[in-house]
Amino acid sequence: MPALLQLDKATIRFGGLTAVSELDLQISGHELVGLIGPNGAGKTTVFNLITGVYQPTEGEISFDGQTVVGSKPYRITARGIARTFQNIRLFPSLTVFDNVRTVFHLHLRGDIRHALWRGRAFHEEEKSIAAQVMELMEIFHLGKFRDAPAKSLSYGDQRRLEIVRALATKPKLLLLDEPAAGMNTNEKTELMRLIQFIKDKFQISVLLVEHDMQVVMGICERVVVLDYGVKIAEGTPGEVRANPKVVEAYLGE
Amino acid sequence: MRFKHAKLFLAGVIVLCFLISLVEDKINSYWLFISYDIGINIILAVSLNLINGYTGQFSLGHAGFMAVGGYTAAVITNQFGELNSFAAGALFLGSLLAGGLLAAITGFLVGLPTLRLRGDYLAIVTLGFGEIIRVIFQNMDKVGGARGLSVAHGWTNFFWAFGFAAVTIYVVTSLVHSTHGRGFIAVRDDEVAAEAMGINTTKYKVTAFVVGAFFAGIAGGLYAHSKQFLTPGGFGFMQSITIVVMVILGGMGNTPGVIIAAILLTLLPEGLRTVAGIEHLPGISREFPLSWVGDARMVIYSLLLIVLMLTRPQGLFAFRKSIYTK
Image (tube, rainbow over all chains, first blue to last red; front, side):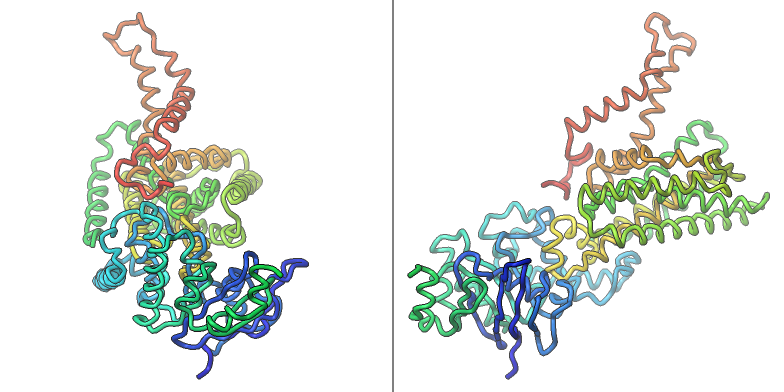
């Protein structure tokens, strides 16, 4: 089976700094992969490369058999890669409902002229979108916050809403950037269950960047370790944990 | 969903405006001309609100788009002599649309390169653009240059001014209240997140600029046919600022508020003028002269703005949950 996402010697340099160096990474369909590494290892940069925020200086990144290099972020999202952000980035002044609804413009048949004409087709489509948004929100117990501004939610709910918003793009690959940041043990356990649930329910692949070893080792099927932009280890959680290079990167010699 | 009968409502308002315009000559012409100003300012403020309020792109060049539309409409209609009312109406509509279109094209051309900029930088570039437009007209001898341009016809009436105000409100509201249209607000709230959620932020920003500029151009044409005289100075920096003030005072991204602000800020200077004139009326005591109100008219106006901004920074009319609260 060909990989869903494939990075071939992807490299990016900022001036003299090589943030990510010749990274090879494959993610297959319906796989949960963890990407870990010490602070500044280049994990978020990898996300930004995959989603088109940065362009690789060298190397190739392809998704679903086609290159994503040179594509704008919004096009890559439309092709099936969705992400969340390390520091939550919702649309704070929009309601919870509208945060999710906005994303549904990707699945609209009519264009903006429908909104101007406001004919029957427009109203029917808006109605069906509202139903889909509510259905998605109910799965994650966000329905009760429908009309609340996104910024009024608690931290944990905002994280959840961000994941729901990403799922609304109907992705094949979901990139989660440190979803457990700032969570307590209970919330982390809840989050692990949530990620597992998303992967099975929506039949998608997940790439998880995370500092928290409990979360990564608990749910990931495969773990990739970065240090200074270089891949130093890859394997099952058990293998990675036993790898002396990884121990050295985290704890020093 | 809301606004189900928006089109019907729009048609009703336009018919009503037409009926009022039939009995226009019975209205005091001073207040009639002020009502045209109100209609024109509503168009300007509501269209700028799409750019500055909903999409969060701080533009200071709205008077420039207005000038493009105003001069276009004036030059086109000046080619014709007296016409019967039907032909005049058709020609006027055509010239307004032409002015709006030219302004929209200008908006597109300005928009594309400048939309990489944000916040203050964009404000400065649009300000510069507005000034360039003004200077171009000032040096264009065909349209009178700095001497100004006489407009042969005064075809703006209640129907045109408020009919187009209604259309502007309809278009902006319809755009924003749709799944597509929430994208404008998403761009304002967080551009990076919007792009990551599949929103083509450039397209949204350019759309806001083009639609906003189009209606500013229409307003310019209405202005030309209301005042019947255009000078480049009338489309300067101060005019842009006045429109921005209406948007901020009404509440960024709050269309009803912006409409009320446009009405108030048009009436306020005129109202103060009336207060100053009261002492000349018979039966009013001369012991408390009010003529100073006339002299200090613009000072009072400015002071009121300061007080309003200090007391209601979220916009004067943000009673309901405003979408602009950060």
